[in-house]
Image (tube, rainbow, N blue to C red):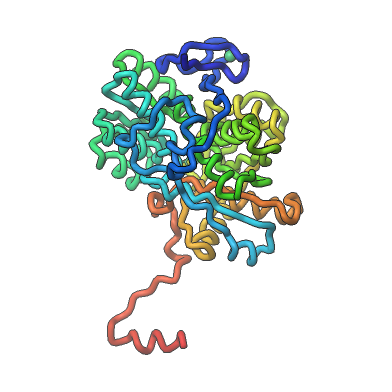
Amino acid sequence: MESFSCPICRRPYPADVRSLFCPICGDPLLSAYVPKSPSIHRRSPMGVSRYLDFLPLDEFDTSLSLGEGGTPLQVLNRLQAKFHTPPLFAKNEAMNPTGSFKDRGSVIAIHMAKALGFETVGTISTGNMAGSTAAYAAKAGLRSVIFVKDDTPREKILAAGIHGANVIKVRGNYAALFWKSFEIGRVLSFYFINSVDPYRIEGYKVTSYEIYEQLGGKAPEYLFVPVSSGGHLIGLMRGFLDLRRAGLISRLPRFVGVQARGCAPIARAFDRHKKTISPVTNPRTVAHAIANPQPPGGKVLLRMLAANRGAMAAVGETEILKAQRALAEYEGIFCDPASATVLAAYLKMTKQGLIPPGARSVLVITGSGLKTLGDVDLSKLRIAQADLSDLPQLMSAWK
Ligand SMILES: Cc1ncc(COP(=O)(O)O)c(C=O)c1O
Ligand SMILES: [Zn+2]
C-alpha cells in the first residue's frame, strides 16, 4: 500500500493527496515508496517506463504521456575550452514537451489524478508548471485550473491557456496563494499538483537515472540545479539516493542548489547554518521562475543537503544574464534566466578553485528561453535592418 512520510519527523501518513503536509512539522510529505531490488528496463526508451521499478506506479499509461524525458546530456566542450573548466555537461530539460523539467513531475501526478478519479486538477505557478499541468491535463481529458502570479510573462500564460485551462492571474501574496489552493482543492475536490507534490517529486527522480546512464553508469562529481520551492532538487537527490541504495553507484554527486541573490531564502539559510527559512520580503531578480520568497520545500532541502554533503549558492543579475548569453552563443542552448544561474554558479566556483580538475559537473538546464523572450536585451544582439539595395555593401564588411 502506497503511503507518505514526513522527511523531518519520519512519521508515516496515508497517501492522501488532500493532506500533503505534516500536521506536526508543517513540511511537505514525500512518498514512502522504497524500490526493492529495482532493475532498469533496458529495452524501454529513456523516460518513465525504463525506470518504472523505481517509481510508485504499477504501470505507465503511454496514453497519458507527451514524450517527456530522454533529454540530451550535452557536452559543453566550447564553454569548457573558453573558460578552461573541468569536464562540463548540460542535461537539457528545456527539451521536454512543454519546454521545462516540470513535465516529468506532471506525468506522474496526472497518473495519480486519473487513478484517484479526479475530474479537475490545478496548480499554482510562476509559469512553467502552468503550461505543463495544463498540457498533461488536456491529454488526460481532465479540466485544469491554473493560478499564476499577476506579473507572469504573457508567453507563459498563453502556453497554459491554449490547452483550454482556466487561467487566473492572482494579485496578492504568492505564499498565501499556495496554501489557499489546497483549501480550495479540498472544498471542490480538485487535485492541486503544486511544486512540492510528492508524486511530482517522484517524477523528477527519472532525470537522475538518465544522467547516471548517460555518463556510462556513473554519477557526476557535481550536479548544479536552479532552486525555487526545492521540489526539483529534492527529487533529483532522491533519484541518486535510490541508485546508491540499489548498489548501482557507490557515492553521490555533490549537489549544488542555485538561487538568484535577489531572492535566495534557501541559500541565505544555508550560509547562516540555519535549519529553517526566513521569507524574503522584496524579491527582485530576472530569474522570475525561481523567485519564491517563501519556498515550501526549503526546510526539507536544507536537511537533505546537510545529510548528503550538498551546498547552496547564490548568483547576481549580471552573472545570470552573461551565463544565459554564453550558453546560447557557445553551445546553442537558449535557456531562461533561472536555468542560467547554474552556469553562473559553476563558473564562480571554478574560478575559486572549488571544482577539482577532472571532476565532471552536470548543469541541469530547467526551462526554455523561448518562454521568457521579454528578458532578452535586444540592444546587446547583432540585429540590424537594411534596404535590399544596401545589403551588398553592408555585407562586404564581413569579408
Ligand atoms: C525554469 C525553472 N527552473 C527551476 C525551477 C525551480 O523548481 P522548484 O520549484 O522545484 O525548486 C522552476 C520552477 O518553477 C522553473 O520554472
Ligand atoms: Zn513531521
